[in-house]
Image (tube, rainbow, N blue to C red; front, side, top):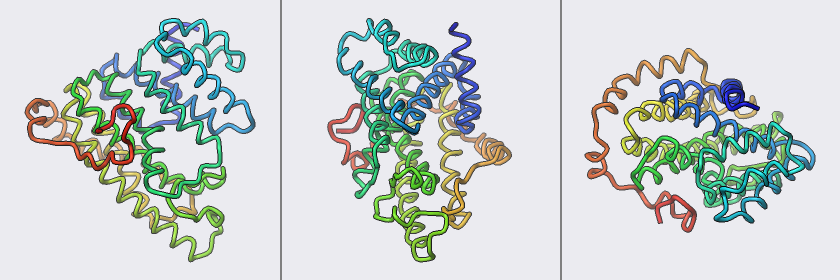
Length: 318
């Protein structure tokens, strides 16, 4: 499959399944957009494997993990090995190969794969620490990949990128409570799963609402740190990342404005609202164009407490 076909399919996947990411990508350079949509399509493929019924998806994740674990230090020879994986379709093989051409960190990829592999099991989060580690693995890692794609050079950019990824995943957790419960998953750090249904009684609804509210408050702490790191990115990409964070954060605002009615299903940010948010953010675009990241780096310190549960993992504040 030619590279331009892969790129076209990736953009289609982004538009259909990740409209907030697609909208933000409009503000990136052509090269960054291309790499970002391939990354998104690859992550979407992995997510589909984790969510798919039966054993096929988990088997594919396991095959990919085994491949990368066995090939440490020999990443240049992976193409033939990927083509030989029998559980992959031809299209899946070619997309994985396109992802590898981005030359992103394999240790970070293994963390992402581990998080998604945990999704194939009965995911029941009991403590906040478990939730933060999970959010790092499935979304903080993607933030780290984006720092590589966007060419961020500061080490601090990585810390804040992890925080932005965690914030977005915490938002996902709050948005998808009912859908996750239907698959036997509970990421809210409390024991509500047996009663999380669309017909849950009033007491259960209120208990889950309280937990969602606390999780959105936690997400705000990570959003604040994530946005602070945008100044460390190259100027051309700052506004796109800011808009992504603003739109995604607004999902949490919409959940609250909707009375945290989680039993009614997902909350979305409509297109007209995204346009409004973009127009209201134009002064911020000017700020990002005029501000030197070297100047901002002298002013800010990353809050290491946000990574207290992540010690030893790649790209975090140790």
